[in-house]
Length: 151
Image (cartoon, rainbow, N blue to C red):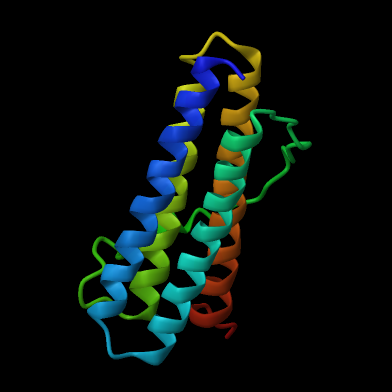
């Protein structure tokens, strides 16, 4: 494993831990059971991502999965207002906040991809960016099911 890839994985691990901490903080600030359930689900998702990254760091070998380039987005982070903070947020705003965080993480990895020389590291950035968009889409679909109604 290149030093460049190792540093990327360590940065990704840090982002996952930071996300978990943020969602844990939000759990302490709400009495809403639905919000707590969603936040615990987000924490678990970040924990799974963290495990994959730590395993990769220990094994030292990266075999990229096929990246789906046809990921869809409802673009809720662009067109729906709210979700700017977690403290005191209701379920709708927690979802919007998480959607925006996943988009931001994807953009972070996409930007990093252009800064690396090593192809293995670029591939890892591509995979991480894609996974963040997959998480975002799942959250957008939950949001859509809960808060957009047909007339």
